[in-house]
Length: 282
Image 1 (cartoon, rainbow, N blue to C red):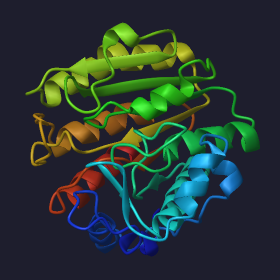
Image 2: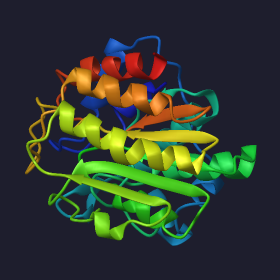
Image 3: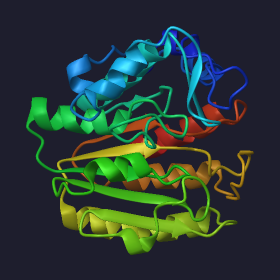
């Protein structure tokens, strides 16, 4: 599921996180169901009202997190659509093809291309509105989801597990930061399908199964793909690797949904998302 407005809202003026990401996905998946915007109250379960006031009140383009995160007068509308479509995916077991991404955003500000933490908003919604007691968030974006980790760090109702390249932005996510419901799996640069899938099998899957979630939400980033060209990223996961990661995520709980995080190569993004969809449905 997605929304055509996300292909025009929140322009980023040459930034890798651009409206064209959604445009190419809508072209590849023309039957994608249209999501709906989140209510502000749903977003306030995660984010500080003072920060949301700033985001909602923007009247011109500016930097939140120079040189990573830009926002303008249509960014609030885009953020609500992204969060709401992610809620729809969580409720229906779908895959939210949205932007801007969310997993770097902490409660108080924007960070790392992210304005609102979509997966966190969906998790809190499912707890508050649907009575889901235990949620696991599995994140295979190449960058550590520091915002998601910070939001749920002291909450034993949500397990956060992240596979990511070690030593790149945002510089967090070491194994030393782990606890009972925080599972960081930092990988060395140069890793490919074998290393990512092996790490998932050895470290992520057992932790999630022990947690026994009622719902698994996947922060599905594709910037570890071998054809991506993002600063300092050196990973070599193929379409097949992402299919296998998605297939394993699909088996971790009775209900599974996903949201797009990173992935910026416009030529390969539709293809690799199709591989992931195949994995989630297998």
